[in-house]
Image 1 (cartoon, rainbow, N blue to C red):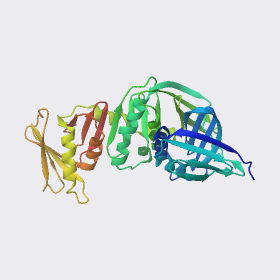
Image 2: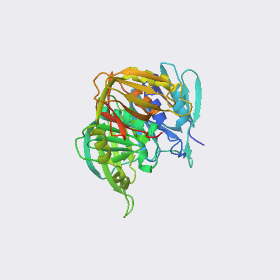
Image 3: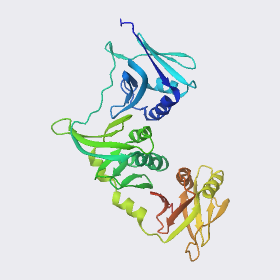
Image 4: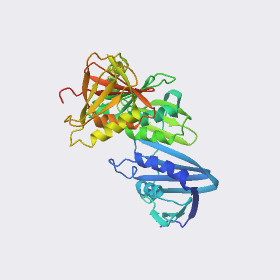
Amino acid sequence: MYRKEYFNLILKTKDFQDVVKTILFAIDSKDVSLFTETLELKANGTNLDLNVTNREYFVTRKFTLDKAETFNAAVNARLFLNLISKLTTETIEIIQEDNNIKVKANGDYKLPMIYNNDKLLELPPITIDNVTNEMKINSTILHSITNYNSKELLRGVIARPVQKYYYVDESGAITFTSGACVNNFTLEKPIKMLLNDKVVKLFKLFKPGEDVTFKIGQDAITDDLIQTKVRFETPSVILTAKLSDTGLVSSVPVTAIRNMANKSYNYSVVVNKNDFLRAINRILLFATGVTYGTFEFTNSSMTIFDASKDNKETLSLNNNCEVLTSYSLIVDLNSFKLILDGVEDEYITMNFGDQKAICVKKANITDIIPELRGA
């Protein structure tokens, strides 16, 4: 049926795997369709594009080849990415032969190419026809959203659809569930948008410290419907995405959350992060389905209790806490563990005392954990 053709690519395994593992995390496992299950490889000259989409985002990772090649293939994304991630050879050879591609590495593997109505499937790109704003965003900011804001979605309870998204404006990023993560940074121009988790995971494709060109625009779908789109672009990565309904943006309680993160609390303590994390890990060994615990503060120490208060550890504070007698609060210990796991600093600062929340501060990040009064 198809013309017999042979084309081949030779790629360095490690360079390819670093990209593949990140994209694998973002492959949509819920909305399964011909497009979301397909990965596209296109080479023309010394440039190779690896393309993946879920119809809400379209990502291209560009590679430079050692020699000019012509290559065009569409294969099952999850199978291809999982295979590449598990290879251990120094190089990978990918051969396009007839209606298949063959991967030569630790062994020989054959993947059928995907056709639609007897024609090789092409992924539909997402374009922005009417750009309304453009600026540079350093990838350090994007990585901080991935590394810190994402943890709030893992530890809290999502009660409203907007809580599944990452709110981003010119002053920082916010994710919120039963608590919140407030990430402070400054962008060149004003903006308000909600990003989904798949797009944020793909920020890992950008190299550390590089400037990313950001564009936002609105394209008309019908006479009455406008679609907002964003693009993050470097010479090696292009990530374009459609944003959710802009009406959701106004439902994020931005001012209230930032006020809670930045206000003055009655008490502030500094604790060694590693000692704190080790103590929580030990106390959690005694948790039997209930992971909340009690923190009790005095002027010079804090004691961590499990839910039953049968098990405890006391840590010294690295500053003096002005507590006349003592102050205690109940929190979810797993929430604290998730926060501390991502902290690189030796010490953290905790602000509390309003009987509502405890704020954990490190560098430009503030995590807000609700007090569980009466738990």
